[in-house]
Picture 1 (tube, rainbow, N blue to C red):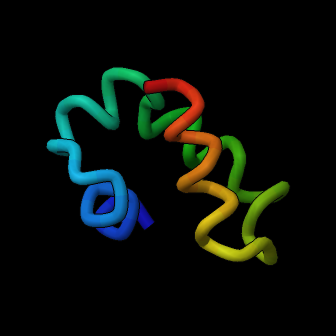
Picture 2: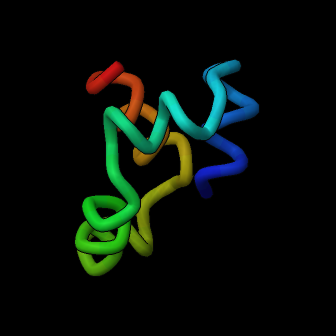
Length: 48
């Protein structure tokens, strides 16, 4: 998912993970695991 977000948003992993840390991504797994991947990308994009 992080690789897809990196490709879709054209941002380096460092920038993505600084604004939306991996711990936060993992903690959202139970809420987001059935959602379309684009929803998670939207959440990350909102934090950029």
